[in-house]
Amino acid sequence: MSHAEVAHVGSLELESEFEHEPVPPSHRKSTVSVTAVWFGFPMILTCAVFGGIITALLGFQRGLLAIILGNVVLMLYVGALSYLSGESGLNFALVASRVFGRYGYTVASGFLATIVIGWFAFQTGLTGLTVHESFGWSEKPVTLLAGILFVAITFIGIRALSLLGMVAAPLFLIVGAIALWLIGRSSGLSDVWNYQGVTSGAASLSIGAAITIVVATFADSGTMTGDFTRWAKDGRSAVVAAFSAFPVANLAAFLVGAIIVATGTIADPGTNGGNFLPVIATGHGWFLSALAFVFIIVNLGSVCTHCLYNGAVGWSHILGSRMRLLTVILGAIGTIAALAGVWSFFLDWLNILGVFVPPIGAVILTDFALSNGRVTPVDARVRWQAFVAWAVGAVAAGIVHFQAPEYVETLIGMVAAALAYIIITFATRRAGAPGRADSRLPAQG
Image 1 (cartoon, rainbow, N blue to C red):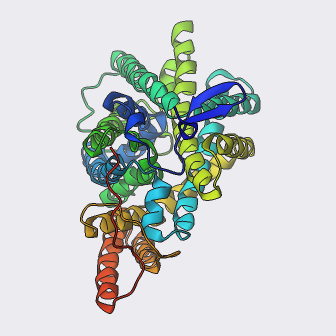
Image 2 (image 1 turned 90 degrees about the horizontal axis):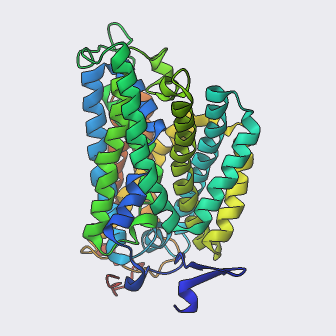
Image 3 (image 1 turned 135 degrees about the vertical axis):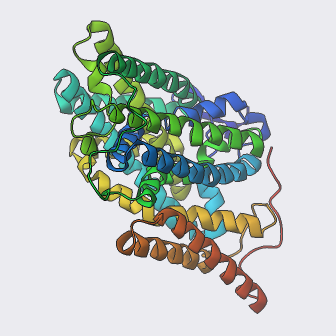
């Protein structure tokens, strides 16, 4: 391997993470390996919780419809962005630099890379809290140890995320199946389809708002999918990897939570959602208790490592540094934030994601389409066209969020951003405005 293809950490030799250049064909991973990275990410307890909340507020049939539609949006959105990076080998920051400008991309990339570190902090704090509530262990030490473990796994790189995914997804299916079996043995599953929810009369959640929740849950890392799918052999393999997550893994996780709430066994399902961990954590012997503990660490660890990887890749490119150094720095910041209880601001994060993130991906995809399906370099330091379109999409989504929350704000924001970018692009082309080079960046791989 050349110097650029190897990272040395003391006497330890690790594969380069290619923070500042396309992943060369020689270092692309198998479709199974890249699929494992994405497949193990959305199949998490958090999605089951939200699936349960949506079902509690809408009923099973309407909730299932919202969950399916939300996954369709994610499938198309993340799949298209994945194809882009699978063809070019570029991570999200490198792709964004082609659209927002050589310096302007730092705003879009830095914004998302910071949000995912917030998710890392939240999920790390949730790990300590969940272990405390399930087993009575002291919350702060568990949070600290979990943060150190998650940083260590992320430090290894994309290979570790792939291996973790291969464990996390099957483990979720096993534990979820056990929970459903225990519930079915005690109360039965026959009335799930006709479950009407906990509200009477008009539901407190619309289908449109529920779709937004589904999309917003993975709006950030879904937009940054290039950090994972740039390792795929080509665009088609990248789409396969994304498809394993949306709709397959994500739908499975939401559906498990929906079914469990629809059995009527969850106390206060509008708040607790489909959290099935208490079903197996206590009262069923040491084996299931031990399995529940392993599940907490592996399941939430999958989320934390993926988010930290996104953040470290993004900020390492912005700062001209290395992913592993930023993994340690950002991981330490996130763990300290987790110890401070930042996870309590969870709903605020969701609101930010739902309104401001998806228009970024919409602008990138529209630029990709207008450039004849190629990722093209730019001359401009800042491409104001992309920022204006992003702003239009964010404002449109924000108006819907506050004035008409029954509609799908994430989808409206993406459509508004795409249309604005098309109009601005053609207007500036007709006016002869500079900013994009004529040359094309050939596909890598």
